[in-house]
Length: 119
Image (cartoon, rainbow, N blue to C red; front, side, top):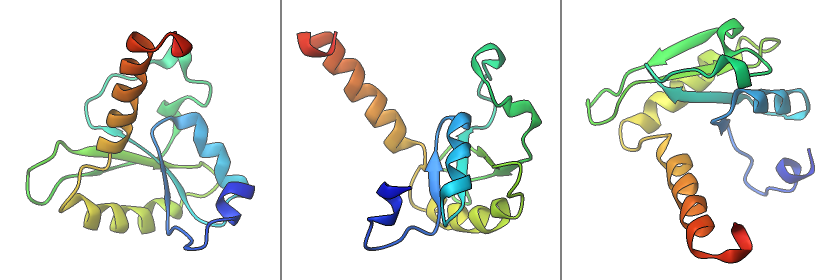
């Protein structure tokens, strides 16, 4: 994966918000973890990799500031979930790991409404 290999400071995990992106793990040197909010509805019709078959772990925010999340790893890399759970748990003390994805989605939505090039 050229993008990941070109990074000078290698990530300890790659976090994604779409389960089909777990396939990146096959060519990634580090764990790829899918996250979503606990209790969030799953659109099974649009999910090719069928999130329902993934081994999932719930992580609760220790401070209670953020809604719990559910994370999953690639089915062939089940051990990834445990190391990622520890890392995400530390991050979760201070930050909502889903906030960057929500911010990007909002920016794209605003662009599509305000800029003709993105409509």
